[in-house]
Image (cartoon, rainbow, N blue to C red; front, side, top):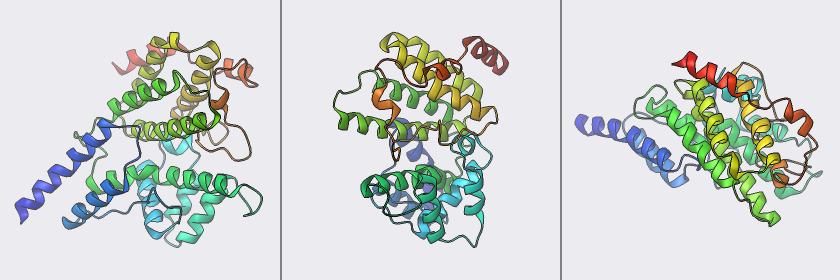
Length: 295
């Protein structure tokens, strides 16, 4: 029996690693999480996860958020999504699922139940739940001991997810609904990317490679789109890495309550924030310095 347990302990991290490498931009399915949960529990490595198919805030959701706090407190992920205060609340043992649900509502920008479209309200709250639980990635990492595991190459996952994001944005659809779906898919992938970055062995190098890759494919984007990708993706991420809190004004989310998502107008003319964006353009001289410093 002990030998069987050892086999499972070796197999699970490899399976998780292979799954992430095959589709680093995607949410882990409930089916995969359930299977891993059962096998991990059988060898004394239990974890809880937040279902991707429901919107009810349960004790399992709260426990998944607590796992995220253990892994991500003080990280670039915490600063990018402005989670410091939220993580402190979640870590409090007296904090219950109802309070966690209220916290997700407040982070989504809703203070009443009747002031916004109910479907949009639900989508925004679920997304904040996903932010707080890191799409269930932290729960796996804590249970299987993957933070510093050689089984997962977090640095490679950062770049491969970024490549997927850029490929997704190369030719955005014309239909409004289809563009909205792209916004949500890109935001999910971006959230995964920042989680991987938080665990990467060389975060500066990872962001530098992202900047270089964007430069390499810049011919596929218009000037306005290229400017936006620099200003509203890479630059805020760099600020978070430098110790600054980014917060919801610049953090990329798939659902934006009460306003139009900037990704919907990505390649159309000048943005209202283009002048501000120009001040945040990524500087390749600094990229070279970072790469040299990291060897």
